[in-house]
Length: 134
Image (tube, rainbow, N blue to C red; front, side):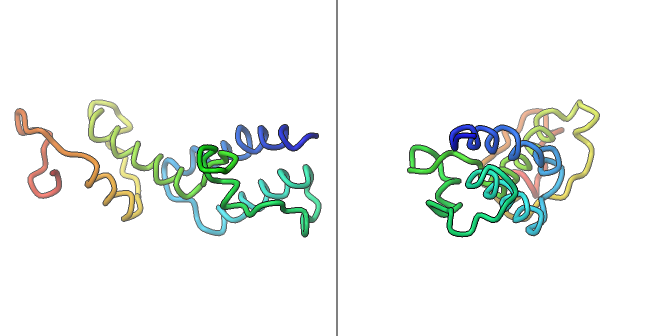
């Protein structure tokens, strides 16, 4: 398989597998490293064989956006942060949904990013939290 085909598989299949788990909770570091290792092996060698000496560029460069010189493969840590921030946003804006009351554990970085990125307009006073909302 050509390297471009391997890139499509990595971006569309191998990176999509842990998405649902990352939305509900943070993916552990060892699990992220294992998924990255599988993606690296598949991308550089198109199989599960050893890829020592076959790397053309480092994996963090591959994970950069194409506008910054990378290949656009998503970074799993940043993707997890984005998905958890989206969950907090949906909890805040869609309080009528049944799933919005489910508690999820989010990283302190995600909570700080969400608080810094959002603000609450006080309307009837039922949805704004005095000590927590900006």
